[in-house]
Amino acid sequence: MIGLGYVGLPLARLFSTKFPTIGYDLNRKRVDALNAGHDSTLEVSDELLQDALRNHGFRCTANLDDIRDANFYVVAVPTPVDDNNRPDLKPLWGASETVGRVISKGDIVVYESTVYPGVTEEECLPVVERVSGLKFNRDFFAGYSPERINPGDKLHTVETIRKVTSGSTPEIADIVDEVYNTVLVNGTHKAPSIRVAEASKIIENSQRDVNIAFMNELAKIFNAMGIDTHDVIEAASSKWNFIKLSPGLVGGHCISVDPYYLIQKAQVYGVLPRVMFSARRLNDGMGAYVANQTIKAMNLKGVRVKDARILILGITFKENCPDIRNTKVVDIYHTLREYTPDITVYDPWANADAVSREYAVALTDKPLDELSGSFDAVILAVAHNEFKGRDIRAFLADPAEGVVYDVKGILPRHMVDARL
Image 1 (spheres, helix red, strand yellow):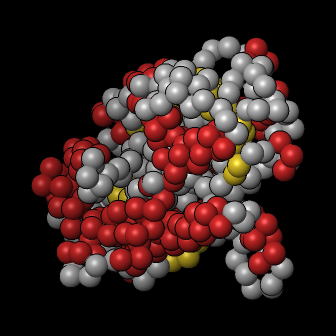
Image 2 (cartoon, rainbow, N blue to C red):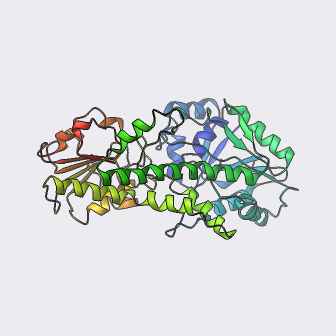
Image 3 (cartoon, helix red, strand yellow):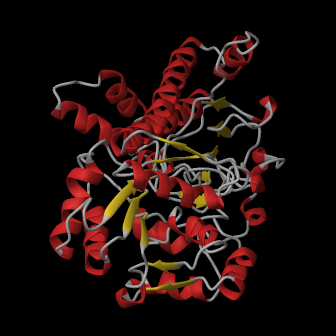
């Protein structure tokens, strides 16, 4: 397994229950921590990881020579976008070079990273050929099985999800499918080609992006009308075929990134994906919208915005998960910083050093109870379990005059001044 992040580690741990498995990652600190039995992403429990290390021979390494004896390579590295939202394939190219240095005749390499159709065969495998000196589909073979990891989700775990598989020849497709079926409870869907498998993954997340964008647009409309969006959704969902979704911030490494891969590739073929592009633009702007709505609520209650004391609860991109990748809560923070420097951010799940390094935001190290009675406004940005059932208004210096904004729509109505 090349890449031991949110995707690679859970799958490698699962494969180790049936096959001799070794994980490879460039981050030596990460490798050392995993070999010591702890996963900082919390995707694999210490109990499961230590069981794999102790009883199934699983181990992790940053030494390339340690993976030369493998014959089935799985690549699970990030596929980010650059500052202009263009696909950044450098991690995939680097991983493909790694494969090229160790792959042998008859071996199979399977990619899991989310990409637009054609990346595996047009971008990755030529790199493997160049570095290895071997010929694709003669000396070595390939497959694609898109990841379906949902960070923080303890119900839809890697062993229970149904995965799409594919191969570079019909025979290899059967082998790849059989390997994955060996460890998956709910089996696989074997796609007719690698390009179909790649396309299936990219539209999974693009569809969710578009659907959430529609709900966010409705929230903007109904907020302008003075109508509670959640009340509207509850009423509409009484119809049997209404798809019940909620507005919200769209962050993380999947929904907020993957659509850009298909948008870019579509334009290469002369197609302008207007719906997807509009959805991305709308969802990317929701952090600033929440900040401005909070300011509006403060003005309406006569709370001075300049130099106001504001508490933001949560900075991860989703609840009960330490993942801070592409979190839109930082957009709330930076928009509010234009009005006041006195902003406190509290998150019991996030790593403070990582947040500071990635976003230049300092998390408070005070216990939550010590923050009571200190603020002019509170924004519940992430629905961590630690925030549920608490009297959020108790964090306000003046519970009657201060403002509570509920991004997630989980607080009792009497506790909230405004919500998305």
